[in-house]
Length: 225
Image 1 (cartoon, rainbow, N blue to C red):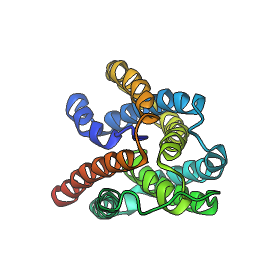
Image 2: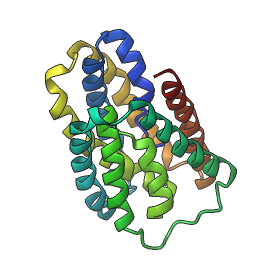
Image 3: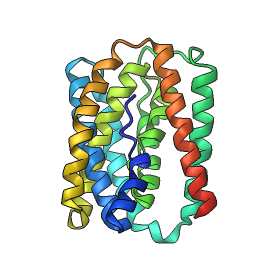
């Protein structure tokens, strides 16, 4: 689905590592590696829009660095609540109206940069890559078809994750990283094989269901935080 789902993996890593900083660094590293494995296959099969990558990835990285520096000044509960609201709206739009939105003949590039910067800021502030927010932007504002949005999202996620890993390398739990990669790499590779065989409607419904699940998780974090 073009999602490495680090937001679902992070709670398990926090429980295992017992250290939020170590869990965040390890999670970003696993997410980057999984995105690379899936993105490579999508790229080989022509499901990556490199123009969108070029417009979206640089501001995403800049935003993530700025968000990380400003993290202490923003309420984490507020960020979680905003993310939950955006994801819930996007998921209902994809599930209930899966074929209404039409991909554009030529994707719009400036929304890719704006979305990349904004999502990078939020992701840097809370320590996740947030491909779950990039996917609705790629499908809606940018206008990519679902299959190309999947591949493009993974490539941008890899570049953002690599930058995040460099910033968190000193706090990575290397044994947990190795264990996570044993599942994440083959899972992302095999998942990428399925994308081309799914219809546009089915793929959009699956993405919508995943976004709704993650929205619930973020809403719970906002309520408990």
